[in-house]
Structure formats: structure tokens, C-alpha cells
Image (cartoon, rainbow, N blue to C red):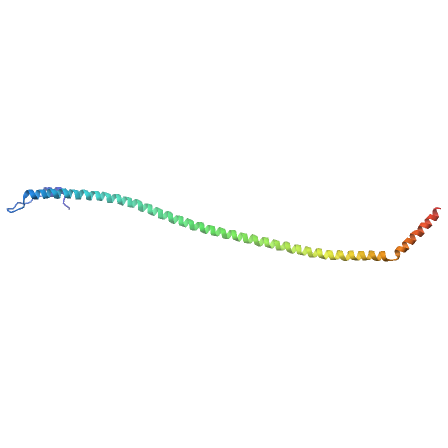
Length: 167
């Protein structure tokens, strides 16, 4: 057990014939008591400071742990958001590709239908042209025949006969 200032103060030394000067020893002991009291007081203050520092350290350690947990949660959340964004972007791209394929297929289908219709119209135009040509040629042949002259003669003859009958 450590000495206390009171132990030092109450310490009695045995006297001997050629011993130390009592006043000098008492002065020295008084000085030791004062210094020892100062050391004890400083030790007590330092102990209190250490306790305060340990409390602060504990507080800051808790804050650090909380911040580390928060950072980990934020990182996990960021990773999760990145993953979700990546999945969503892939879905959007897939949907866009599907729509693009559908639009291209519809356009190709319409293009085929239009090509078929154009070919059909060309065939119909050729048939119409051929029929029109045949009709025009038939009409020209008809105009070029001598039947017209006979018609004119028949009509005139009929007109004469009709005129004779009326008179």
C-alpha cells in the first residue's frame, strides 16, 4: 500500500547519539509531504482526465462505428441502385429492340404488300393497255372498212324511199 502524506507526517524516527539534525529532517519531511501531496493531487487530476478522455474516446468510437455502418449501408444502397439501374436499362434496351424488330417486321410486311399490289397494278395496267389497244385497233379497223360507205348509201336510199312514200 502506497504511503500517504499523513504517513510521512506522522513518521517518527528513533533518536541516536550522532543522528541527523531534527529541524533539518522535519523541514525536509515537510517539503516531501508538500511535494507528495502535489503529486497525489496531480495523479488524481490525471486519473479524472483519463476517465474523461476515455469517455470521449468511447463516444467518438461509437460515432466512428456508426459512421462506418452508415458508409457501408450507403455503399450497399449505391451498389443496389446501380444493379437496379443496370437491370432496368437492360430491360429498356430489350423492350426497345423488341419494338424495333416489330416495327421493322411491320415495315417489311407493308413493303411486301405494296410490292405485290404494285405488281398486280402493273399486270392490270398491261391487261388494260392490251384491251384498249385491241379496242382502238378494232375501232380503227371498223373505221377503215368500206362498210361505212354502204351505210351512207343505205341511209340515203332509205331517205329517198321515205321521201317517196310521203309524197
